Image 1 (cartoon, one colour):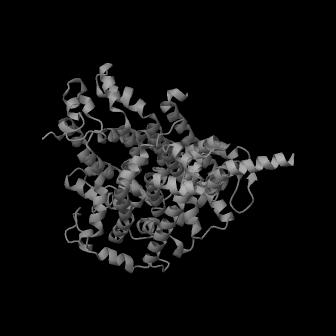
Image 2 (image 1 turned 30 degrees about the horizontal axis):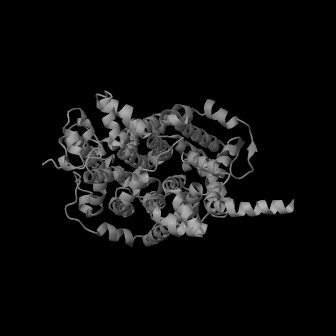
Image 3 (image 1 turned 30 degrees about the vertical axis):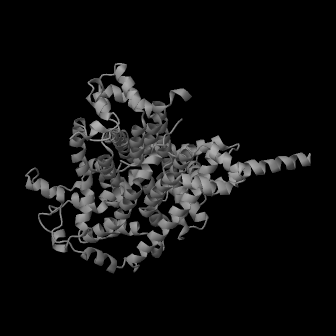
Length: 307
Length: 310
């Protein structure tokens, strides 16, 4: 019995132990910084926790309050998040695909130059470029946009771009779109270049008569894995980009909650009001939103063969 | 004129009436049908480039140009004054700016190196080793691709506090090493290496470590370059770690210092500090750009393996 066990043990050591050894460092860090935080967020979301006393279980109260009593969440945060996510997510994703599609039809050198230009904003993202936005959209007549519009006589008085509820969201969306040609964009460009050219020839013989048909019947189906990867990256970066409103306007909450996204709401409750349990419920809602949108894109780009 | 006519039958396809659109993908040279793309892409690229050009221009402006009315986009008399001012400054808590820069360089170098080791070893095991949990672990990592770190800032804070990592150098580095995208991209790339190569080495008596070091690593240089860039960007541009997990001013990063220059919440004078902030932004931005220019072809070859099959 023991000999059998020890033989099995030795067998496992030679076959599998080294695999786990190679994985161990990553697995450990993954557990500490990804798996456990998600689990803790989930557990804390059912408690009242002010970061000083021990968390007190209060069932679904946080979620009920979030949905029924949190006026700011329902009136501003949720609509803002959905508006921002829809325009930046699918909007940015479609833009990334179209740009990649155009780039793929240029020779290598100009393609590389354009790809570099389009990709470079995403290297730092909108947040690190705050000084640019603050000077371009500055509220005094000396701001670049104001100065331009005043000169053209399009406006009579300088506009407080970053402090006005009606402009803040638009600027947030433009700035985020500007920085959204990231890894997903490069993946789609690479995917486009990998498609076997014979497919297009076969398609034109089979009666595909315009470019839209070609895109929908040949191009996209031939690069579904890259499309899916790009979609996941677009979803993640959209929700991750949530701090831009606070950076632009310089305050959390943003002026009249105009740029308040779910990420800011979480931070507001977690770090400014120390209602950690409530903030955790917000985190869970955010993670569920990401999961939902990823599932949705999975459906769109699933490989027929494996389904 | 039409260089495209020579390349790989591209011209032949381009000329044939029905195949005209097929001249499109990955052409070898110029073709008139590309003009419309240039017409769309050139203004768009110029527009996307504006903020970067602005940073370059603004960082070298002397004070009278920074506050000129009407404001001028391009610099006329470039000066290095903003940079010398930047490095002559002390932060509000008396930490010299060079200290932030040193922290950023050190943290970034260590994070990139460690990330390459951690991700590539795990990717090798997930791709080429046979073990029970292989599929499950890869599925978990793929699920984690959609992980949004910002959502779990608070639980992360609690965990980091419990582990005693607050106010240490390690807190800049360790969380950045768990990068599902990095593992995913390298694993996909290693999948492209034929198993025969590894089996042959095993027959020759190579150990696992030997195979990883002598065979896998040299073959996956593009993937390594790619995650080096991704990790570099994450570490070098990181503001959140300094803001949330570090109280000791002398352990914070340069990107964080930049954010204090432009944040009105900290009472910084945004208008007066414009030139200095632009100089600092340029210092943050340039390394990203330079590294990407050098490694872009490697990145593209990795990205062609990036497909996500569900």
